[in-house]
Structures are given as C-alpha cells and as structure tokens.
Image 1 (tube, rainbow, N blue to C red):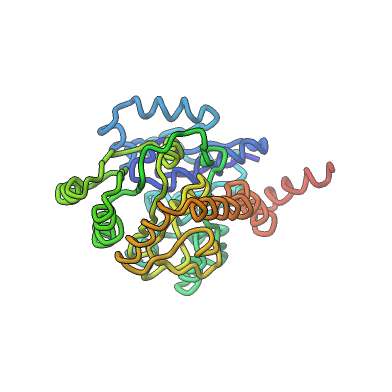
Image 2 (cartoon, rainbow, N blue to C red):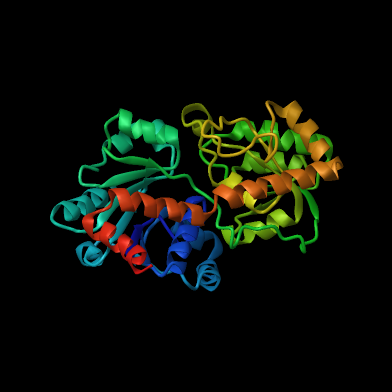
Length: 376
C-alpha cells in the first residue's frame, strides 16, 4: 500500500520529539514493502530553526543516516490533490495548518478512496483546546491519539467519532544498548527547555541534585534561556546544545544514568502519556529515574523498569544509589529494555496501525490488507 504522511517535519528533529517515532514507523512500513512518502511544509518552524542553528550539514546528515526515507516539501502552490491521488492511507499530523487539514478532508469527502487519519501527539487538546476544537475533522475516518486520556478528550468533546489510542514507541534498530561505548559521565538529560512548562522541575530534579552530588553531568537540547544556562554552569553541568536524535543512543551510552522530566501539561491534564523520552532511554538500556507521572495504562513497571521519585531530595538519594549499586543499574537496564522489546517498539505500533486499518479503513485498504493473508 501507499502511505502518505503530512508531518511538521521528517527531516528536522530540532525541538521536534515526534520525529523519532515518525521515522521509526515509516522505516518499519518500508521494511514491510509498503510505499511511504512524507510531506512537510517548506517553512516548518523546526526545519527553519535547524538550518539556522546547524546549517545544511544537518540536512545532509539526515539523508546519510536515513537513506530509505523520502520527504517532499510543499508550499502555497503545491498540488495536494495530485499527491493524494494514488495514496491508500493518509496520516495528517496535528501541527498541520488548519486550512490544509480542512482541504485534505474535503478531498476525502469529494470521493477519495484513501483512509484519512488525524494523528495527535501533543497536549494542545488541553492546553489550547480551541485550536483542536476549531479543526474540521468531519471527513476524517479516524483519529490516532498518543494516550488514552487524549482519546477520551476527543470523544467527550465530540471532535471525532472513531478515536484509537496509539502510543509512541522506540525505533530499536537505532535506540539500543551500546556496551562497547566507554562511560565518560555520570548523568545525561536530553530535553528542550520549551515555554516554561517545566523550568521549576528542571531545577528541582536535575540541576540541584547534580550540583549537590558533584556529578559529571551533561544536558542536550535547545531553547535554553540565559538564566537557565547560567544555572547549569553554576551547577557544573555541561550544556551541549542540540543533538541529532539519531546520535542520542551513543550519548546515553556514555553516561551511567538519565532522568525523565515531563512537561507539566502532561502530568496535570494528560496522565498516562510518558512522551518519547522514556521509550528512548529504556530502549538504550540506561538506568532511568523519573519525576512522577501517572502510568494509568500500565505501560511500564515502575520500580522495576525505572525509579520514581517524589521530590528533589528523593532524586538526590536515588541518583546516589544508582551510581553506587552496580546490581541495581544492571537490573534497571535489563528490565526496562525487556519491556520495550516486548511491547513498545515501532514494529509493535505498525502492527497496531495495520490492525486498526483492517477494522476501520476504507474498503480499498481493507481489501489490500486481506491479500497477503489470502496468499498464505
């Protein structure tokens, strides 16, 4: 089948965590012999910032790392009707321009035989609900929401009729343990600053404990204001700026542990959604200590796959324990990796997507999905 993904960006992962999952899903579809193409706006915020900060070398590095992935940029004069003409499945990400969301829906209503999917991987449904409520999803066949609480929000507010929970997951062909890499640091945190949604938490659960313990620590990410950079420097934490998502596994491998600091809207309004960083760390076999979030869907085994702490004092104590207890580190690494490999890889999510399409896709899609079974 031919899959068409409207993305914020496939090529850029600058402040764009969804790029990891998106790339992993597309790569797995390709391995299953599906035709896959991503479309991204030529002026996407993430792409523009990546080029501004890193130049075109970052774009070249993407193509070298992912030679199997294809992405086409579109502008004001792009012919979307022609692009959709032979697609079987069209997935539209929630950062797509609302007018284009509406236009694609109109083409489906006009007689398009493709299955049209809206994909939501953000907290705007609670933090900026008017943005989602204002979208015209009337001609979309279904919605994929990256957590059960988000799925329920769509249904409760009547934004869509068919909504499925479709969590993010790790591309374990890239995100995997690298025991051959030498450990050179104690702690790494990979995360962007982002709109003051967790500034107090970063201070309490990362900066202060690392300073108190005198850890050799590194932070990678973007959009850190001057006062945040000063606080990192005061704590002796090295700031490395942007890191390509594909380089994150080796960065994890160089350090003895990491932490998860979720953004406040997820903790307060969308419980059960861990975001991609948990999947990334556990897939790489790095011990993880997490700020509290409610695992209401039982995705993981807290206390076994990773450690929860309630405040900065507990974080400092658990950091000390992880660094001093080799058996604990090994248990956390193996348990977290076991859960990822059993339940949370991009292969698992593609299996889920194809199952959803079998039950809720258009006739053309369901017929095509039955063909391999008939051949067997």
